[in-house]
Image 1 (cartoon, rainbow, N blue to C red):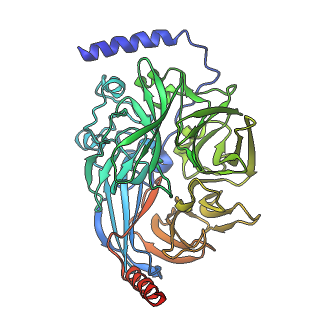
Image 2: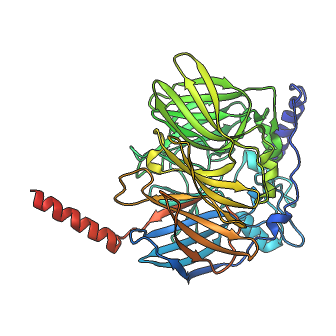
Image 3: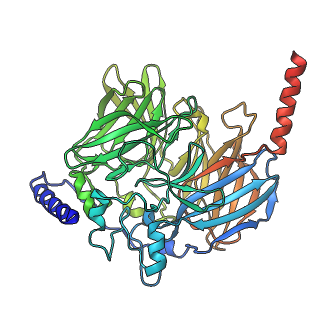
Length: 512
């Protein structure tokens, strides 16, 4: 009976939608996935000892884990969008110069169903179910939170729990050995179904609180809800709720001093309940509408709305306060076509993106947008200790016609630093600081690099100052192109850390 009521509600909603203002533009279809299909890998393995070329810094001890699609196509079935590929985790565990490699598929409900039926039969970013006509309705009205989502986007840590995340709650807890432990259930009353949240949860480097937003979708109210998670807690605390009549597809956000900045692009679902018929299918690009910028005070929850020209972005880089203004850096596109063209990755030669800096003057109620550079890059990362603060550097995948390199962007000087090898395709660069770092760039960069000609992969370790190669660690097989990663420091102190601690203790003792 519940599902019959849901069907009636959906029908009623859709009839109402016909009276809405006509869309100013429509999305395009997803192109074939064939380029990526050639580079998928379904193998799983655990604790494989890897060959190291060069020297791994003595202080670098821990697990580098990268998330992303592992399976996107078979002979009889195919994923519509790269973003819906079945999630696969890859871990390089570094200990005293030795590296062990593990890779496993996330045991999501979509993966388990695929193993049984051989079909990609689930609701996802663009994927729609084939066998269950009520799955899309359940997606909005009765999401089964006990199921494991296809969390193939990021890796994070909440209250000392390692979690894989996507934009559909709930996160998925994983073990150090990459085994799927199950949904990570928040201990609160904020929405866990009929909602979406950013996979790019951020940690405030000062308070260690986690920050994120979710989009609450209801029959009578839809809202952007900003929340924080205190250290050593599983509970999300609502900070601010912004009622909206339509929702934007927002993949990330920024912290900027005491503010939380949400950028609402004109790629919108005018009636959020249309998502019941497929997530991304509900969104369209509205070229004649502005981009909205919500600035939220993280202490009081008060928010302000600003407007600027239409553009789209996946990834914010960082935000900060300076001279009574708020600044946000992000990678901008002229429209949302990249959402569909992403299926061409890594053969996108000119993504038509730019580095934008938003300057928000709250006192004058003004917003300026500056195009900072013409270079093309994506997957930006920075020293996490600079999140929400003014910063000098960020690192990104540098897009060339014949390969993808690593770019170190310098905000304070005109010259940037790059690493590039023709025919090689680097992934997201993750910065790890030296334990005794004194400078913002005193550390190393970890990135997984693919050689398409040889169909091989390796973990590359670069000095973060000059992007000089320190070590390569050969993977035992080709690692499919993926999304985002994280480095988890070794829980137990390494010999290097113990020596540093002993040295500090001895120094303090002599000083006294």
